[in-house]
Image 1 (cartoon, each protein chain N blue to C red):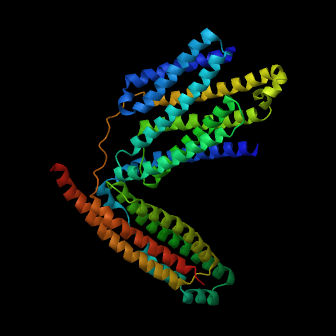
Image 2 (image 1 turned 90 degrees about the horizontal axis):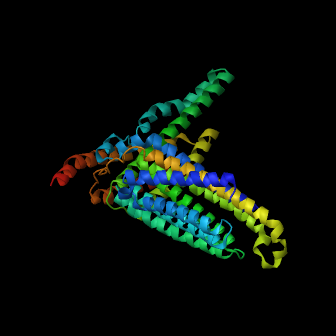
Length: 280
Length: 187
C-alpha cells in the first residue's frame, strides 16, 4: 500500500465509523434494517481487512481472498438494501407494490442469473470471475433502481427525502462500480490476461507492477466514490428521522374494479379514432 | 473493447435516467402528494380543450381558407394559413393533454386501490404508448396539411363525451371518499 492508498483507507474507515454512528444515533435500523446491516457489514469488512493486513501483509493470499469475499458481501448486502428501499418506497400503496414486487422479482432473478452465467463463462481466475459478477450485479442494481423510479414517476408517486438520498448514494456507488469493474475486467481480459495463465508464468515478474497499478487505481476510485456516497447518506441522517406517515386513505377495491376497465375502454376508443384519422 | 464501451455507455445512460427521474420527482413531489389523496381527484382536470372546437373549426374552415387565398395578398394569405395550421397543432396538443389527464386519473385510482389488476395496468400502459405514437403521426399529417377537418371534429366529440362521463365519475369518487371512507375509518 502506498501513502495515498493508506490515506484513502483510513479516511474511508473514518467515514464508515461516522455513518455507523448516524445509523445507530438516528435509529435507522428500526426503519431500514437492511440498509443498516449493509453499513455494519461494510464497516466489519473494512476492520477485518485492516487486521488481516497487519497480520498477513497486503499482498498475502489470505488478504487476496478476504478482499474478494468483502466485495461479494458488499454487493449482496447492497442488493438487499435496494430491495428494502423498493419496499419502503411503496409500502403506502399496497396495490402498486403487489404489482411492482412481482416485476422486480422476475427482473432480479433474470439479472442475477445472467450475471452468474456471464461470470461462469469467463476465463479462469477468481479475479476475472468476481470482477465480472460484481460488474453485472452493479448494473442489475442500477436497473432495479431505475425501474423503481420509473414506476414511481409513472404513478405520480415520490419517495420520502431520506430514502431518496439513500437511493442517490446507492445509485452513485453502483454506477461507479459498474463502470470501474468494466474497465478493470477489460484490462484483465486484455493486456493483463497472461497474469492469469499458468503457461505464461515466465511473464509474471514483468507484469506484477502493471497488475498492482490497475488494482491500486481501481481500489482508489472505489474508495473515493464510496466516501462520496457516505457523505450523501450522512447528510440524509443529519436530522432525526421523521415519523413514518400513515399514507393516503385508500379507495374501496370496487372503485378500481369499475373505473379502470371503463377508463381503459375510453382510452382504447380514443386510440381507434386517432388511428382512423390516419386512414387514407 | 466494443462491449466495454457499450456497458459504460449503458451505465451512464442508466445514471442519467435515474438523475432525471430524481430531479423530476423532486419538482413534482409536492404536486404528486396532494393529488394522491381521494379528495384530490376532484381537482384533476378531465378535459377542457374540446370545448374550443367551434372556434377552431371556424378558424380552419375551407370557406375561410378560400376567402383568404382569393382576397388577401399572397404573402399574407400564406402566413395566415401557416398560422392556422399552428393553431390546429396546438389544439391537438390540448387534446393530448385531455387524454393524459384521463390516463392519469386511471393511474391515481390504481395507486389508491388496495389491489390492482396487472392486466388492466399493462393495457393502460400500452394504450398510452400507442396513443403517443399515433399522436405523432397525426401531428405530422396536420403539419403537412393533409388531415381532413371533419375527422378532427369526430375525435373532439368523443373527447367531450368521455370528459363529461369522467367528470361525473370523479365527483362520485370524491363524494364516496369524503363520506364513506371517513365513515369506514371512524368505524
